[in-house]
Amino acid sequence: MIVTRNSEEVIAQCLEALSTNAPTKMVPLIVPIVVDNASTDATREIAQSRGVTLIANSENLGFAAAVNQGVRASGADFLLLLNPDATLLTAVDKLIAASEKYGLAAGKLVDSNGVPQAGFTLRRFPTPAALCFELFGLNRLWRSNPVNRKYRYLSRNLEQAGLVEQPAGAFLAFRRDVWEKLGGFDESFRPVWFEDVDFCRRAIDSGYQIQYIPDVVARHRGGHSIAKVPAGCRAVYWCASLIRYASKHFRGPGYRAVCAAVALSSFPRMVAGMILARSLAPIRFYGRIVRFAGLCLVSSQRRGGEICS
Image (cartoon, rainbow, N blue to C red; front, side, top):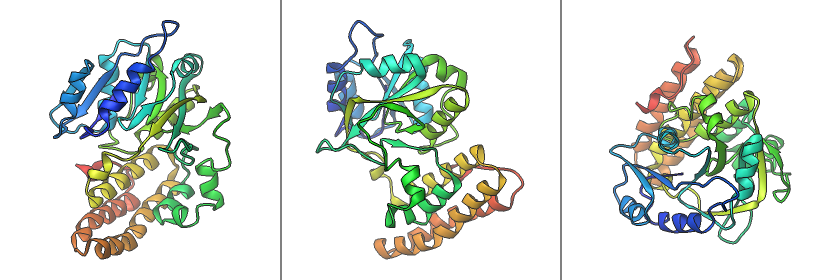
Protein backbone atom coordinates (compact mmCIF):
# COMPACT_ATOMS: atom_id res chain seq x y z
CA MET A 1 0.00 0.00 0.00
CA ILE A 2 1.40 3.36 -1.08
CA VAL A 3 0.25 6.86 -0.17
CA THR A 4 1.13 9.43 -2.82
CA ARG A 5 1.06 13.16 -3.26
CA ASN A 6 2.72 14.62 -6.35
CA SER A 7 4.88 11.52 -6.68
CA GLU A 8 5.17 11.24 -10.46
CA GLU A 9 8.98 11.16 -10.30
CA VAL A 10 9.11 7.99 -8.22
CA ILE A 11 5.84 6.05 -8.32
CA ALA A 12 6.51 4.04 -11.49
CA GLN A 13 9.80 2.63 -10.19
CA CYS A 14 8.22 1.90 -6.81
CA LEU A 15 5.34 -0.06 -8.34
CA GLU A 16 7.58 -1.95 -10.74
CA ALA A 17 9.85 -3.09 -7.92
CA LEU A 18 6.87 -4.01 -5.76
CA SER A 19 5.52 -6.22 -8.52
CA THR A 20 8.89 -7.86 -9.07
CA ASN A 21 9.42 -8.59 -5.38
CA ALA A 22 5.85 -9.60 -4.49
CA PRO A 23 5.53 -12.52 -2.07
CA THR A 24 5.59 -16.06 -3.34
CA LYS A 25 2.59 -18.36 -3.10
CA MET A 26 3.88 -19.48 0.29
CA VAL A 27 2.62 -16.26 1.92
CA PRO A 28 -0.46 -14.05 1.45
CA LEU A 29 -0.55 -11.92 -1.64
CA ILE A 30 0.04 -8.19 -1.30
CA VAL A 31 -2.52 -6.33 -3.39
CA PRO A 32 -1.03 -3.05 -4.70
CA ILE A 33 -3.17 -0.13 -3.53
CA VAL A 34 -2.27 3.49 -4.18
CA VAL A 35 -4.07 6.15 -2.15
CA ASP A 36 -3.47 9.52 -3.74
CA ASN A 37 -3.90 12.71 -1.72
CA ALA A 38 -4.97 15.17 -4.41
CA SER A 39 -1.87 15.12 -6.59
CA THR A 40 -1.74 17.83 -9.23
CA ASP A 41 0.87 16.07 -11.38
CA ALA A 42 0.69 12.78 -13.33
CA THR A 43 0.87 10.49 -10.30
CA ARG A 44 -2.64 9.09 -10.75
CA GLU A 45 -2.25 8.44 -14.46
CA ILE A 46 1.02 6.59 -13.90
CA ALA A 47 -0.48 4.49 -11.10
CA GLN A 48 -3.55 3.60 -13.17
CA SER A 49 -1.36 2.55 -16.10
CA ARG A 50 0.25 -0.01 -13.78
CA GLY A 51 -3.09 -1.68 -13.06
CA VAL A 52 -3.16 -1.04 -9.33
CA THR A 53 -6.19 -0.22 -7.21
CA LEU A 54 -6.28 3.56 -7.05
CA ILE A 55 -8.12 5.63 -4.45
CA ALA A 56 -8.10 9.22 -5.65
CA ASN A 57 -8.88 11.80 -2.98
CA SER A 58 -10.09 15.22 -4.06
CA GLU A 59 -8.21 16.86 -1.17
CA ASN A 60 -5.18 16.09 0.93
CA LEU A 61 -6.65 14.08 3.81
CA GLY A 62 -3.27 13.49 5.40
CA PHE A 63 -1.05 10.43 5.55
CA ALA A 64 -2.85 8.68 8.43
CA ALA A 65 -6.29 9.01 6.86
CA ALA A 66 -4.95 7.76 3.53
CA VAL A 67 -3.40 4.71 5.17
CA ASN A 68 -6.70 3.91 6.87
CA GLN A 69 -8.49 4.24 3.54
CA GLY A 70 -6.09 1.81 1.95
CA VAL A 71 -6.40 -0.76 4.71
CA ARG A 72 -10.20 -0.61 4.59
CA ALA A 73 -10.13 -1.07 0.82
CA SER A 74 -7.82 -4.06 1.04
CA GLY A 75 -9.00 -7.53 1.91
CA ALA A 76 -5.50 -8.69 2.85
CA ASP A 77 -4.63 -10.02 6.28
CA PHE A 78 -1.14 -8.52 5.99
CA LEU A 79 -0.35 -4.99 4.89
CA LEU A 80 2.92 -3.54 3.65
CA LEU A 81 3.16 0.23 3.97
CA LEU A 82 5.70 1.57 1.49
CA ASN A 83 6.63 5.14 0.60
CA PRO A 84 6.47 5.97 -3.11
CA ASP A 85 10.15 6.95 -3.04
CA ALA A 86 11.12 3.52 -1.68
CA THR A 87 12.22 0.87 -4.19
CA LEU A 88 12.17 -2.76 -3.07
CA LEU A 89 15.47 -4.54 -3.72
CA THR A 90 14.52 -7.93 -2.26
CA ALA A 91 11.49 -10.14 -1.82
CA VAL A 92 9.33 -9.37 1.21
CA ASP A 93 8.37 -12.91 2.28
CA LYS A 94 10.41 -12.70 5.49
CA LEU A 95 8.77 -9.41 6.39
CA ILE A 96 5.28 -10.85 6.09
CA ALA A 97 6.29 -13.95 8.05
CA ALA A 98 7.69 -11.78 10.84
CA SER A 99 4.57 -9.64 11.02
CA GLU A 100 2.51 -12.84 11.22
CA LYS A 101 4.48 -13.86 14.30
CA TYR A 102 4.99 -10.52 16.06
CA GLY A 103 2.27 -8.24 14.71
CA LEU A 104 4.54 -5.75 12.94
CA ALA A 105 7.84 -5.92 11.08
CA ALA A 106 10.18 -3.61 9.20
CA GLY A 107 12.98 -3.93 6.68
CA LYS A 108 16.21 -2.05 6.11
CA LEU A 109 16.29 1.23 4.20
CA VAL A 110 19.41 2.16 2.25
CA ASP A 111 20.41 5.23 0.29
CA SER A 112 21.30 5.41 -3.40
CA ASN A 113 24.77 4.04 -2.62
CA GLY A 114 23.44 1.07 -0.69
CA VAL A 115 24.43 2.52 2.70
CA PRO A 116 21.92 1.82 5.50
CA GLN A 117 20.05 4.94 6.56
CA ALA A 118 21.20 5.00 10.16
CA GLY A 119 19.12 7.24 12.39
CA PHE A 120 16.10 6.95 10.13
CA THR A 121 15.52 3.24 9.51
CA LEU A 122 15.19 2.59 13.24
CA ARG A 123 14.62 4.82 16.23
CA ARG A 124 13.54 4.49 19.82
CA PHE A 125 10.37 6.21 20.92
CA PRO A 126 11.06 9.91 21.45
CA THR A 127 11.35 11.20 24.99
CA PRO A 128 10.66 14.81 26.03
CA ALA A 129 14.44 15.36 26.13
CA ALA A 130 14.91 13.94 22.62
CA LEU A 131 12.19 16.19 21.19
CA CYS A 132 13.56 19.26 22.97
CA PHE A 133 17.01 18.49 21.55
CA GLU A 134 15.42 18.17 18.12
CA LEU A 135 13.60 21.47 18.44
CA PHE A 136 16.73 23.41 19.38
CA GLY A 137 18.82 21.72 16.71
CA LEU A 138 21.16 20.06 19.19
CA ASN A 139 20.79 16.64 17.58
CA ARG A 140 21.89 18.07 14.26
CA LEU A 141 24.74 20.18 15.62
CA TRP A 142 25.96 17.55 18.08
CA ARG A 143 24.89 14.29 16.50
CA SER A 144 26.86 12.12 18.92
CA ASN A 145 25.24 13.49 22.07
CA PRO A 146 23.93 10.75 24.41
CA VAL A 147 20.27 11.69 23.96
CA ASN A 148 20.48 11.52 20.18
CA ARG A 149 22.57 8.34 20.14
CA LYS A 150 19.91 6.59 22.19
CA TYR A 151 16.96 8.08 20.28
CA ARG A 152 18.33 7.26 16.83
CA TYR A 153 19.86 3.87 17.69
CA LEU A 154 23.21 5.19 16.45
CA SER A 155 25.14 2.43 18.18
CA ARG A 156 22.98 -0.35 16.74
CA ASN A 157 24.23 -2.69 14.06
CA LEU A 158 21.69 -2.37 11.24
CA GLU A 159 22.74 -5.76 9.87
CA GLN A 160 21.44 -7.48 13.01
CA ALA A 161 17.82 -8.59 13.25
CA GLY A 162 15.87 -8.13 16.42
CA LEU A 163 13.02 -6.40 18.21
CA VAL A 164 12.84 -2.62 17.85
CA GLU A 165 10.61 0.23 18.99
CA GLN A 166 10.06 2.58 16.09
CA PRO A 167 10.93 1.64 12.51
CA ALA A 168 10.22 4.14 9.76
CA GLY A 169 6.68 4.16 8.45
CA ALA A 170 8.24 4.29 4.99
CA PHE A 171 8.72 0.51 5.10
CA LEU A 172 6.44 -1.15 7.63
CA ALA A 173 4.43 -4.39 7.57
CA PHE A 174 1.60 -5.16 9.96
CA ARG A 175 -1.31 -7.53 10.41
CA ARG A 176 -4.82 -6.33 9.77
CA ASP A 177 -6.01 -7.44 13.20
CA VAL A 178 -3.36 -5.21 14.81
CA TRP A 179 -4.66 -2.23 12.84
CA GLU A 180 -8.23 -3.11 13.82
CA LYS A 181 -7.43 -3.46 17.52
CA LEU A 182 -5.63 -0.10 17.56
CA GLY A 183 -8.42 1.64 15.68
CA GLY A 184 -6.13 2.37 12.75
CA PHE A 185 -3.73 5.27 12.39
CA ASP A 186 -4.67 8.38 14.37
CA GLU A 187 -6.00 10.83 11.77
CA SER A 188 -5.53 13.83 14.05
CA PHE A 189 -1.88 13.77 12.96
CA ARG A 190 -2.65 15.83 9.89
CA PRO A 191 -1.37 16.11 7.28
CA VAL A 192 1.87 14.33 8.21
CA TRP A 193 4.47 13.39 10.85
CA PHE A 194 4.41 11.27 14.01
CA GLU A 195 1.42 9.17 12.95
CA ASP A 196 3.67 6.15 12.38
CA VAL A 197 5.47 6.72 15.69
CA ASP A 198 2.14 6.87 17.49
CA PHE A 199 0.92 3.72 15.74
CA CYS A 200 4.04 1.75 16.74
CA ARG A 201 3.87 3.00 20.29
CA ARG A 202 0.23 2.05 20.68
CA ALA A 203 1.00 -1.36 19.17
CA ILE A 204 3.75 -2.08 21.68
CA ASP A 205 1.65 -0.72 24.55
CA SER A 206 -1.04 -3.20 23.46
CA GLY A 207 1.35 -6.15 23.74
CA TYR A 208 2.52 -6.53 20.13
CA GLN A 209 6.16 -6.55 19.06
CA ILE A 210 8.04 -5.14 16.07
CA GLN A 211 10.71 -7.27 14.42
CA TYR A 212 13.47 -5.75 12.31
CA ILE A 213 14.49 -7.88 9.31
CA PRO A 214 17.64 -6.48 7.64
CA ASP A 215 17.54 -9.15 4.91
CA VAL A 216 14.55 -7.32 3.41
CA VAL A 217 15.86 -4.15 1.79
CA ALA A 218 14.48 -1.07 0.03
CA ARG A 219 16.34 1.86 -1.48
CA HIS A 220 14.87 5.07 -0.08
CA ARG A 221 15.17 8.52 -1.56
CA GLY A 222 13.48 10.39 1.27
CA GLY A 223 11.32 13.50 1.56
CA HIS A 224 10.29 13.77 -2.08
CA SER A 225 6.75 15.04 -1.34
CA ILE A 226 7.37 17.08 1.78
CA ALA A 227 10.23 18.91 0.08
CA LYS A 228 7.63 20.50 -2.22
CA VAL A 229 5.79 22.03 0.75
CA PRO A 230 6.89 25.57 1.69
CA ALA A 231 9.29 25.62 4.62
CA GLY A 232 6.91 27.61 6.81
CA CYS A 233 4.10 25.14 6.30
CA ARG A 234 6.46 22.24 7.04
CA ALA A 235 7.37 23.86 10.34
CA VAL A 236 3.70 24.30 11.25
CA TYR A 237 2.83 20.69 10.37
CA TRP A 238 5.83 19.26 12.23
CA CYS A 239 5.32 21.27 15.41
CA ALA A 240 1.58 20.57 15.48
CA SER A 241 2.11 16.83 15.14
CA LEU A 242 4.94 16.88 17.65
CA ILE A 243 2.72 18.53 20.26
CA ARG A 244 -0.07 16.10 19.42
CA TYR A 245 2.27 13.18 20.08
CA ALA A 246 3.45 14.73 23.35
CA SER A 247 -0.14 15.30 24.45
CA LYS A 248 -0.91 11.61 23.96
CA HIS A 249 2.17 9.96 25.37
CA PHE A 250 3.90 12.23 27.90
CA ARG A 251 2.88 13.07 31.43
CA GLY A 252 2.23 16.68 32.48
CA PRO A 253 5.79 17.96 33.05
CA GLY A 254 7.15 16.29 29.91
CA TYR A 255 4.27 17.55 27.79
CA ARG A 256 4.66 21.11 29.04
CA ALA A 257 8.43 21.00 28.55
CA VAL A 258 7.87 20.09 24.90
CA CYS A 259 5.30 22.88 24.48
CA ALA A 260 7.74 25.39 25.98
CA ALA A 261 10.55 24.13 23.74
CA VAL A 262 8.33 24.50 20.66
CA ALA A 263 7.60 28.12 21.57
CA LEU A 264 11.15 29.11 22.55
CA SER A 265 12.89 27.37 19.65
CA SER A 266 10.59 29.10 17.17
CA PHE A 267 12.29 32.47 17.63
CA PRO A 268 15.80 31.53 16.42
CA ARG A 269 14.29 29.38 13.67
CA MET A 270 12.12 32.31 12.59
CA VAL A 271 15.14 34.62 12.39
CA ALA A 272 17.10 32.03 10.43
CA GLY A 273 14.15 31.59 8.07
CA MET A 274 13.91 35.32 7.47
CA ILE A 275 17.61 35.52 6.65
CA LEU A 276 17.56 32.53 4.29
CA ALA A 277 14.35 33.56 2.53
CA ARG A 278 15.09 37.29 2.67
CA SER A 279 11.47 37.69 3.57
CA LEU A 280 9.24 38.49 6.55
CA ALA A 281 6.95 35.55 5.73
CA PRO A 282 8.43 33.32 8.48
CA ILE A 283 7.01 35.69 11.07
CA ARG A 284 3.49 34.62 10.11
CA PHE A 285 4.22 30.89 10.28
CA TYR A 286 6.25 30.92 13.47
CA GLY A 287 3.83 33.35 15.06
CA ARG A 288 1.13 30.70 14.65
CA ILE A 289 3.39 28.09 16.19
CA VAL A 290 4.30 30.27 19.18
CA ARG A 291 0.68 31.19 19.87
CA PHE A 292 -0.45 27.58 19.66
CA ALA A 293 2.41 26.22 21.78
CA GLY A 294 1.80 28.93 24.36
CA LEU A 295 -1.88 28.06 24.54
CA CYS A 296 -0.99 24.39 25.03
CA LEU A 297 1.48 25.32 27.74
CA VAL A 298 -0.93 27.31 29.90
CA SER A 299 -4.15 25.45 29.19
CA SER A 300 -5.42 22.74 31.51
CA GLN A 301 -6.66 20.88 28.42
CA ARG A 302 -4.10 18.98 26.39
CA ARG A 303 -4.12 19.88 22.75
CA GLY A 304 -2.45 18.96 19.51
CA GLY A 305 -3.22 19.17 15.83
CA GLU A 306 -5.60 22.14 15.84
CA ILE A 307 -2.93 24.46 14.53
CA CYS A 308 -3.35 22.90 11.09
CA SER A 309 -7.04 23.69 10.84
